Image (tube, rainbow, N blue to C red; front, side, top):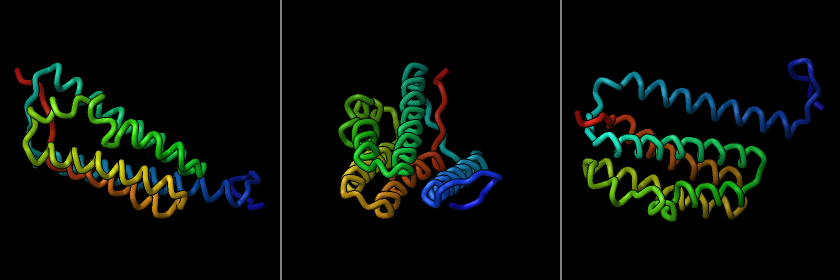
Length: 159
């Protein structure tokens, strides 16, 4: 047992906790970098209903990534793979109405979105193999696509 923060925890629990902390700090760093670059992003104008739909999709993507990280921290690789494929992967594109949404985006933005969906499917396959480190590396490809898109684009209602 290790003694940390006035409580006893196992080494495994400590390692899981540290992975969560590192992941959270990495996401905060990415978020802060994106905010700092906000003034240089290209404005993509969408009809209000499309903007709401896109924002809901992105919030679900973020929630899915969070859920995946929690499964990875508990070494539940199959569950992480299932969330990735069903909510982020190529299998999710119809439910997100990706083809219809892409008509309103710059071509590069749509290409980045597709690359995120492909990366999520690759992550799902890697997670199913059961090795944690390669799965984390594959998940980084998913979030890298998110960072690329959010660093380059911002959306607004057409008024």
